[in-house]
Image (cartoon, rainbow, N blue to C red):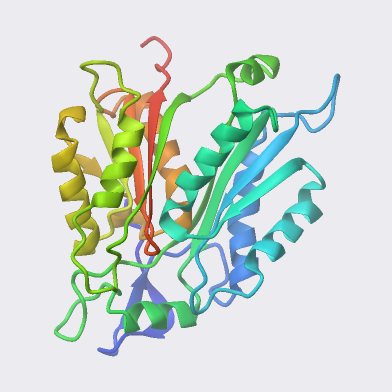
Length: 324
C-alpha cells in the first residue's frame, strides 16, 4: 500500500508538487510541535492500554524513552519540552522517568537500549519506547531539497532522494514478571541491542564503508546461538545510495548471521522516510509480520542510521502465533 501524496502547496525546483507521505487526517498547516503531539500521544496511549493507571495494588512505575528528530530547519525550538508538556497535560504523571534522544533515525535504537538498561537495574517496572518525526514543515522540505535529498522525477530532480514522511510509534518493553502481573501476552522478546558510531557521515564528502553499522550489527548479533541466523531485516533504507552502500559493507562483514541479508524490508518505499519514528514502527512490523504468518521466521534485525553518525541494531524474537 502506497501512502504517497502530492503536497497541497509545496513545489520543487522543477515546479512540480513535492511528493510526500503525510498523515491525511492532520491539517497540512499544523505546526511541528502540535503535529508531532497529535501523532505521538495516541500511539503512547495505545501502547499502555493493557496497563491500568489505577486499581488494586501499587500502580506500575513506568519509564518513557522518547526518540525525536535532530535540530534542523523547520523543527520547533523547544520541541521536546513542548511534547512532554502535552503528554503531562493528557496523561498526568504517568511516567516516573523520561529520557529523550534527539538524533533522528537511530534515536529509537538508543531509546531501546536505555529502556533495557533501566528495566535491568530496576529504575522502573517497564518502559514505553516511543518515536515521532515529521519532515512536512515547509522549511524542512526546502532544506531537504537544498541538500539534494528530495526524491523527484524529471531532469532537475533527484531520483535517488527520499520521500519525506511523518509518523509516530510506541512499544511497551518490560520483563516477564511485569507481563504476568498485568496479564499481558508478549508479542515478542527483545534479544539484544547494538549501538555504533560512524565517523564517515553523509554530507562530509568521505566514503562510508559501514564501520559504524558493522559495530552495531556485531554487538546485536553476538546474542545469537551457535548456528542461529536472522530471518528478516527491517531497516530505514530510503532510496539514498549512501545508506545502501553502508548496509552492503556491513552485511558483507556479518553475512554468516543472515539467511539472506539482501532480502530486506524497507517500509520507506510505502510510507516515506519517518526518521525518529522508524525503530518502534519497524519493531512492531517485525512482530506483526510473524503473527500474520508472512515473515520468514521469528528472528528479525531492525536497524537504523542517523545523519549525525549514530547507528543502531535491535534483534527481536517474535512470539509464535496461536496454534504455531
